[in-house]
Image 1 (cartoon, rainbow, N blue to C red):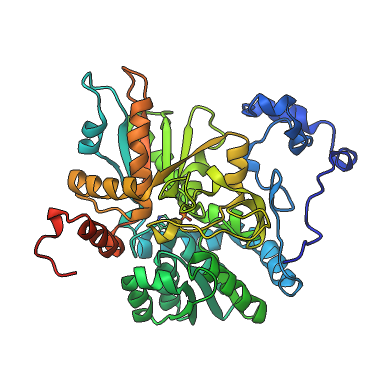
Image 2: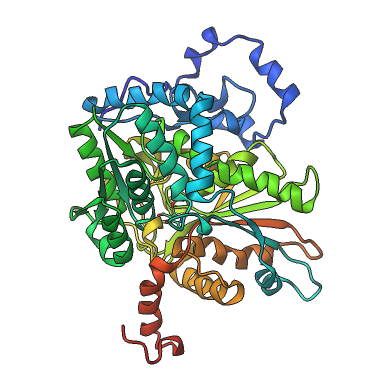
Length: 470
Ligand SMILES: Cc1ncc(COP(=O)(O)O)c(C=O)c1O
């Protein structure tokens, strides 16, 4: 991967000549400054020399950077295609005809808006004796067509590709949900679709492989590396390098080179937009949620939930990564907790790597979180402390999977179960007497994961699997 000329200079002295001096003075009048104090006198202040504070909703800058993260590190053969997408996306997405088409497909094909559901029994489970504790609401993305939030982005990008005259769609997938969503939208529009998937993920997500094939997509197994999501992504990039003219690559998360992180975030932002309206409808005008909770693989469902609230300092945002066997072991996928900065799949972000810069094998029980990188905007929000990132182990996620199924009648995806597991720690942290409104992004349903959970329970000789053939 080469460094493109787009790479933003780290030298703060190159900027002031071109910036109008009035800009910093006009912004604070209209919006609160939420830059954390340590950034005003710390060594990292150079990120923000051109602005008073990081207005998160303004991100990324014109070169696709979120502070030092992001950018477009792509091979020369792809630069043309990436730049074409970068230029076409803002024009097409602002077109009212495109917006009307997008809204109509989200409503009629995908099933939006999704409900904001009060999880009564889960709330009672996490309540203290005096009744205090989080009031838990679920944003039901699991009720969407194909069973996860991934369809929001797939519809947006396939409509965009059609507008750009692309004749072929490729995608990568980990848990298979993004692959299924892309294959579904391609079937709807009669476009050929190739999905790259790690051979290991194909094994643990057999049901989704079959679904993609039923939908007419070609699923290409990837055996290289760890045969998981990162290898599928690398293979999809290789395909795109080979056929950049007629192919659109539907990246499934807020990762990849600019403009993908911003584009995928914007197509997912409908989640937070609906939450914003639904919280007011339920709890009163101007009421905002207190805490947002979402799992983070590449980070698209979390960014979709957070986006509407990033400039609202009162809203606390928590992303939950996969701690696998524990962050103190080598078997985890907790990129923001344990990673270091580096370039992966076209963008600068946090990655799991060794001292030679070689990508380390991640581990998570959930294929969708089993990724050694993370979207660059999350890296930026972590460093500026706009969002917190926690990590939850496989065992904690399985416990939450079982708990939510039993208490709420909702079988969540194992990815989503990581966000639910974080409620244990969160409720212990809530000060006595308080009842904060917590919105958990229920990013997907767990049908695809029942075999994995059965396997775990069988090893534990759980009574739940008595009499079942595995
Ligand atoms: C249901 C579900 N939730 C979450 C994720 C993680 O992806 P992201 O972090 O991009 O939302 C996946 C990935 O496949 C998923 O299938």
